[in-house]
Image (tube, rainbow over all chains, first blue to last red):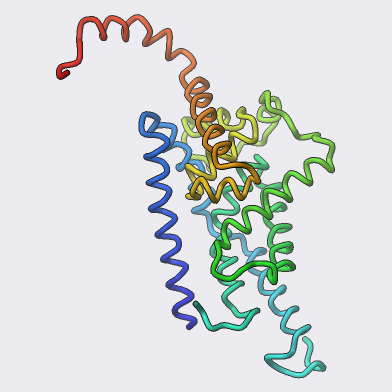
Length: 80
Length: 187
């Protein structure tokens, strides 16, 4: 199941890419220069690595939630 | 779909997968890397707190974009629109990070983009760069599909004007001449 989640992300990314191309060609046929620059600008940010502090934030939120909801694992007294 | 629990690893992973695109969208709204990342951080916290409201199987990316957009405009309202500026003076004050945007060419494009009214800018970005359908973009912006279409169309026209200001006078006479001297080859 974990493996599946990973592949789903790829699949979604692929679908999004396809749609970007479709949208762009629909909107921007005569404006391909605008379309290309728009995507280049967006991708310049999108292609950056996700900043470390976001990854940490998500990890911490996840940990805090698991600590607060020990239903699936551990005992209430086990927090951090 | 996945048989993970209601708070399974799925949500965290999927949220993570939206972050690159979410940051790019935040950057296009906020205009500056530091405020964009603040906005993304606030959005992650909100999305996490509201994750029970997300319907599994629907589009998480669109859902998160909606949260970020709402957050952005509500922060703008709180600040009394101090950064609201469609005339480009804000753009002039922006710290420029040339390496971040590569060529000068792209920087010109970015400036043109920032001169668009925000509703047009977000519409053309959601459709042309984020990869949303018109329906999804309409939902994210809380408006009708037709409204998104007309905003995209106006954005496109305005960008064309801004980037090729001299275009008409350059092409004007030549285009006319070309039309006369080179009639379409086939009927």
